[in-house]
Length: 272
Length: 322
Image (cartoon, rainbow over all chains, first blue to last red; front, side):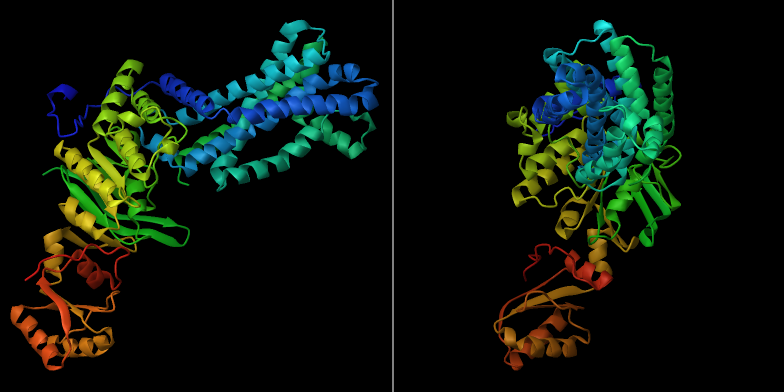
């Protein structure tokens, strides 16, 4: 039945027959469009992803620079590839926060009752988050260049490092999606995730070389995937051989996605 | 007669709690059907199972002959759900929300924009199309939410407490919408705590309590199932209430239902002559009345008789005046 052969009742409430269901790619794209619209309507959402990176970069460069490396200009060569890693990993939490608020507001109920490819809302949200990660990365790298960061491998190396950080952040986001579906409020997603993020990013080689740390901490720092990602990021930006760290990071990302994505999708399909 | 919904001993437990306890429903296509019950009776759980959001713990449910677990994605092709909370994105505008749902249902961008504009017009929301939903009033939110469920024609529309929290004017608007949707041939299953709502909209209804159907039928059938007529009267002096209740109970030979209004008493009587006896007895005992009426029992009376509890929200009590 087409819309036209239905009588026009009162307010003109015409009901049309359902079109062919949308393809998976199309629904993911549409939901990514929704994520962009949210940023457009609530630009404050970008506040965290812009102010935090700027603050972290300035703070750590000038606070530790002189003490650790003699001058901020020397230190930023070491710090910037790492602060990029830390900042982006921190803002992956917003993926979980977004999922949680969509659930609380009943939006996922509507999505789940629509005849579409079920993972679309989650992948659409992730696509929107990748945009945020890119904005934050661009700011950090731009600010770094102003402050005197000179990547030996040039912009191509920086791009490769950025790509690797995105891959790892995409993987970590899945963990927060699980959190987002488990806890009751967006605030608890934040609080719980920081319990993990603080040790993961600070007990790493982002700020200092681990050789002065106690041996038990060194053990943790060496197995911490964040350290491998930081090494890889540094190497790619400065043109040293870090293929082992790159492989390590990609493998860690694959393992994280391999475990958390199926759990997240299972939880998404089941009741809450 | 084709069936829109059929459940057979449908059960759902959350830990210890039995939200649905062998719920049996048979709902014909092309009607408005009401699920009536107090908070926590299992109405929302039933809707969530039927709209494939929850898997049942036991029993089975079919929607248009399709099993809600095995054929979940085929069921989703035929239904729309408007949940208890406005399930639209508050950050987006009304128009963007409708375009979003239209796109997710498979329309092209231009079809989606056309459809969104049509729906905004039909729901009286054209003026607010560029406003974020978070700035909408309660009634507007409900309308945009229902509009999002009508982007394409669902064979079954689930409405979970569509008018809870709405002012009377918005409630009337939603009622008109439900009638129009039903007139277009969509089966509507609505849950409500308001007996008046079920009475006005639903051809048939099930009274649900503790996850079970405790009564089923048309509003008329439910009312006549408790038998007799309802005699209601208002006392001039509330202090005489107990005396009046005792007297009325003696004349009728049945207990008098309690009432939240301290001056009101209502009782089920078998006929007009018994009603006359009651009034006569009250007059002889010098108990003055300000008002009385004899009429069909309201759904409130039905609900009370069936559950032993007054309903959460009282429907209007203006039935029939003699």
